[in-house]
Image 1: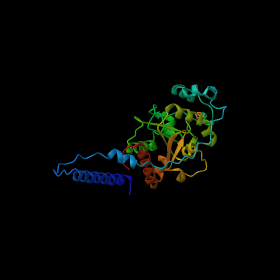
Image 2 (image 1 turned 135 degrees about the vertical axis):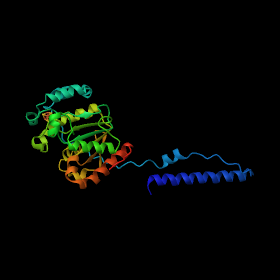
Image 3 (image 1 turned 180 degrees about the vertical axis):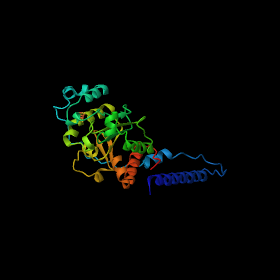
Length: 274
Ligand code: SF4
């Protein structure tokens, strides 16, 4: 029996018991007028006794990869509190000049991120910019991006309102290859600061590079990471397949939809499409 059914059954039982106690009280008081009794509201009591169902949360730990002290010098030298309050704009201008890994030599634009920067409901972290993203300087603008927008809309989210979208690396890997571990590690300094400044309510990792980096499990398969909740720095995080992978293999649609519904349920959002 689900919690919703349990709540309904408990509320019905409490109402019936209350009615019987009122009738019993009438008998003791010799009151046979048959006047109706006030119906009490047990809904709050029932909610306390049978709480709302939340998905199971697994805490695995933080990513093992940390940026080297040599990287991202200006930020790493600053005191902790100053680093935390470093403005988004100065972080962005630092990224635009960045030459900390080899991807700087082939990029057209640094693709930093887009969407709501003020405590978004969800921060989506993908792999890296593709050709269109590199040309436009925006993440997820090609077919995969349009598909991602549909996923978000299906759980009442939108990059224009309550979602911030970024990638593990901010410069395009040539021929759309997966970013190398040293490139992800170099760029993690930016991602870490973005999360700290933007402070999302939850994180959605799409695809293996983002999921393995953020969970600190470099050798894990996507199948073993998807659909499970983790915590990154106290922020609930869930992983699923990348939209580009689902475009290539439509059988992944069902597991992605299950993962999105799990996220929606956690956030208390309606999930309306598939
Ligand atoms: S991918 Fe990241 S670390 Fe590498 S050059 Fe671009 S911004 Fe810098």
